[in-house]
Image (cartoon, rainbow, N blue to C red; front, side, top):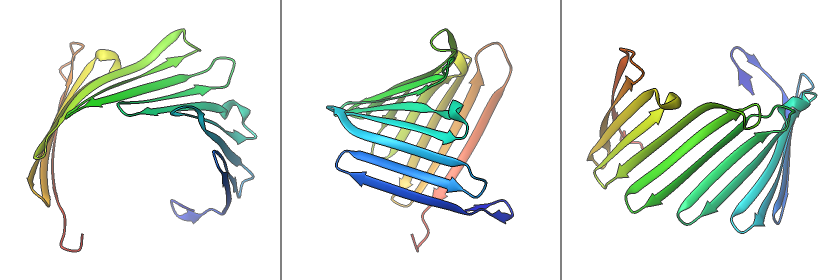
Length: 178
């Protein structure tokens, strides 16, 4: 693995059988990162346990649920004062709705939340996202000019009385070689 100007050695191993999986990496500094997964704990539900040794405070339990019209994910820190992150997305036709939240100190402190909606049509995509605990609004639009060209814009506006407004414009074109 190359990091900045140096190369770091790491040994990576993985194993998978039926609905179980294990992946581990040992870095040159002796840090061991491991993830164990179990698929189909219940219909549509997968579970994972991950962490880094020797820092046991990095242990996390992950839950992923996938259904035809709903995807949900939760990550729970396995400490005495855990951080809980959860998100869910659903789509009906061309409309996608979703949201996420982060709780700290178990479920006693709401640290962040966001909610959004998007409309996807063959020639354009439009979205609205309320972020930063409801203190910012992001509006986005992308238009497919042709099959190989897209142009887009995003506006971010502070809603908490701040005068901050940001703009971003983008243009993309697929080159002949793909």
